[in-house]
Image (cartoon, rainbow, N blue to C red; front, side, top):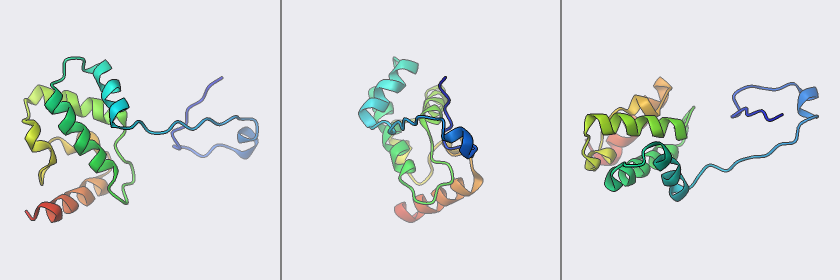
Length: 121
């Protein structure tokens, strides 16, 4: 039996004593690009590169309650592609469709403040 938890819930100690754990490291940009291309095989290279840069920049923000995961990245790319966003706009003071990547209001506020401070806008 395989169970994934994503550290979402506390499991009882008696249960955990009977488990074998395998931690999966979060994918680097190269592997993530391969994963994304499974879901978006014809994504434009510039859009993918810009999205990955913004995604990993967001994941590096300290204090996020829920850093964006692979599924949020895949959904975000769908939104970006459908809207025809220019890849150059992905690392500005306002990341388009930020709510697709970040699910906690305090994370959105935190990132918004940091982006404004970084770009001076």
